[in-house]
Image 1 (cartoon, rainbow, N blue to C red):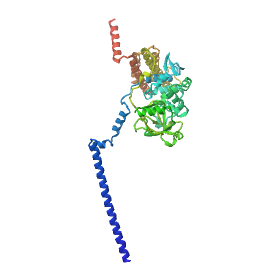
Image 2 (cartoon, one colour):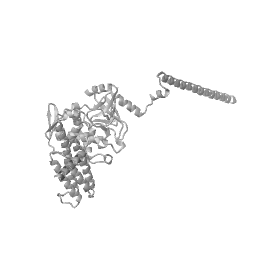
Image 3 (cartoon, helix red, strand yellow):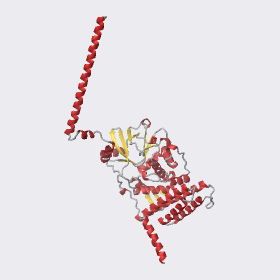
Image 4 (cartoon, rainbow, N blue to C red):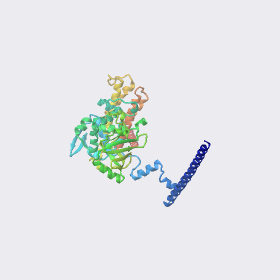
Length: 467
């Protein structure tokens, strides 16, 4: 037993000794490899004519440096985007559509969809081809309030989506219902049956939904960075491939829908695209699952004419990243056919339409205070004054050409009343902001400066005194 115990202890000591020896050998080997690796890196750095720190910088770049390199590679221009004439005219058309009494006529001619408003014909097909910026369309709250009341649209707004108007939520629901294919058909083919445009209010719904997607969300849960989309190869695949090879951005003409859940995308379609967008306060694609008619699809929706950096990973897989660029758009493809004087008339008529919507908004607010109202029958001085604003706006609408001097009278009266009224203070502030915005647009349309208006007014006063 003693011998066996001695043999066991000797074997264990030898084993321990071997283990220590193995650890020592391993340490020396890894040290040598590490030293060799450092020498290799130093050698490569000197071979390329860089210091070690510069050589490492080639592989360890900041996010900002990578973004700048990508922008240069894909020819992305940064800075503010100019609102194109096509975007201005699309906005004008949608304002006219919101005001049901604007005398609009849709018709088809030479395979192009055209719209007649107040005797002026707009080529909708040419307009959509010229890539209008849907993110620059502006619908104010009072415009949407007036349109909602006139159209009888009502949609419940949850707290998470309270940054959206109920009309905007309704437009998103229309997209997620049974109209998405028709809406994208118009945006991608630039033409559609006039009956659909007129009866369904299709163009207006598209533009309102696009504005909803341009608004910053209130919750970070509505900002998703990764989504998936499956597609069948189509004619646009080859165009996409060619633009990728020449490092050019790809513009998706219609809405682009993806899913944040890879298992919910259409598995029978062969081509898969991974969309990734950086985390930000206002990402381009918005998560709309909670206001969708098809909840459970976990839909992420990008507005029309979104630009993407596409990369073909393999025969069946693409990666895509949305970008906002200030790249100029070729205005030559929008053949509007209007003279300079007609373009000015369109700008002024656009402001008249906004005044009509403002008029409707004021009447809505008056009825909310006193449903059985008659003009001049109010106890509140503020409400009485709202009725006088209605008559002032009516006077402006009857003028053949809007002038800033007439709008200035309304502004000065509203400012006086704001200091007096109580219950309608918020409404009057809304009206004041709206009228001041309209005045700025009128000044721009006439091509005159604010100081020239006051100078002309002073000259007229002096002439009266001389007489």
